Amino acid sequence: MSSRIYRGLSRREHAGWILGLTPVQALTCVALAVPVVITLAAGEITRALLIGCVSCPVAALVAVPVRGRTAARWLAHLILFHLGAALGWTRWQTRAATAQVNPDEPDLPGALSRVRFPDGPPLRDQGRVCLIHDTGDGRWGATARLTHTGVAMLSDAECELLATRLGNLLQALGQRQIVDRLSLLVRTVPDDGAEYRAWRARNEVTPAPPLALETTGELDRTIGAASVRHEVFVTISGREDILRRPATAAGGGVNGRAVVLYRVLDSLDERLRALGAHNVRWLSGGHLAEAIRTGFNPATATILSAGHHSHERRQESLPWAAAGPTHAPAPSARAYHHDGFSTVSFSVLMPHRGTVFGSLGSLLAVRTPGERRSLAVHYEIMPAHRARNAVRGNRFQTRVMRDWKGSKGFASSAEDKQEARRASVQEDAIAAGHGMVRFAAAAAVTVPATWSIEDHAARIEGAVAGRFRLLRMELAQDTGFVAAVLPLGIGLPRLRGGGW
Image 1 (tube, helix red, strand yellow):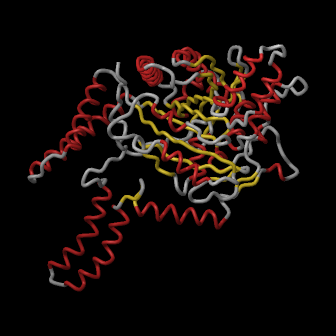
Image 2: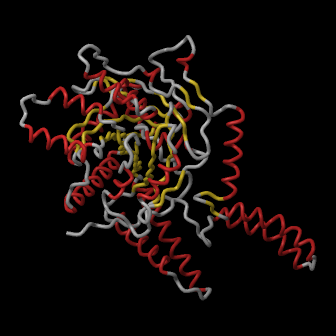
Image 3: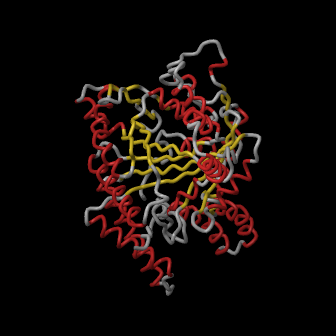
């Protein structure tokens, strides 16, 4: 059985109608061209040239795309970026440097300052679950840590089965209409081998045969140096306007919203195990704080792990005041620096020719000991009525453009034919009862600040060259870090207006 190729994943939410331009861009260009045409019709050539010298650069700013953004958006973002740096908006220092610190209050920089972490009531035998309240986006969620063996060693048939189960999981969440977002995050754990050597020292049998010791030592030198551990998280969240009514019926407040989310969590455990997860543990406040802390400072992972396993120091969890970095200077345009580490974040763009299940795993292939890589995929299940409107709009757009080109004598290109075919297939799928999912993928590489971050960024780009396109999140590296590294489900922007 050959690997199934998944196509049609790269469609933009706001696709251009005319020559790749959105209606607003097209109308702006027409408005800029009208004065030039009028003056030319009046025979005022000199005046038309002067107006054209102003209109053409403005039209270029509005219409010319540069690495995912128009030139006008680049200019606006650049001005805001330097304004924020000059006024000190992006500099951050932990409150631990002052005398007054509340250990239960989160102390996080940037986009995380809007997030609250109240504890919900106990969930079965797992204790209290920490809720993630994004006050800016109006969402409530929870995060679980999974134990998963990965998909690298699975056959094509097993990968196809997991892909089908993931689709069924997303469709089931959409039908519940309580949770509409699911985020999967995988990040490697930098490992210098110290923890493994300590474990070997504790568990090695002294009278072991010399040949067995020699063989084990050779395996350590060849395989142990290249091995890497992974952390897997899943985050689910729902909108406040959807949760409000059932939460009020369940008692209101934080507990009411927790009760509504717990109803989804109860059924989600088995579905996650069907995806290959051996253990599903919904995180409490302290353990979520640890996951955030190790995201900012990977070096603390070994310390926190040793603290949990120590017989002398049985620390249950990390206080929220210590979850963030101790210092995060104003981020540069191309990297984010935090607690002696540097991170570069990318948006992962899907190829037009399609991809296979598990192909994103190459982004997690660590090449240098001490390097950390992260990959996050954020899914949002669209309601049925929005999915129907989206496919109808897509079909209408492709048909209008095909008829317009035909009336003007232009032949349809291969890309136009493929787009029309995809629109028809998607409409048939929605009519058959399938769902539609928005998604975004983000990847990041983190290294100690003394290393050359540009070299490691180039390596991760080279690792997927020819298969995926990585778009560096310039001028937004701090936000990209949150989307790609931290298990909070933040990373998929709200959809404003039409499109999908």
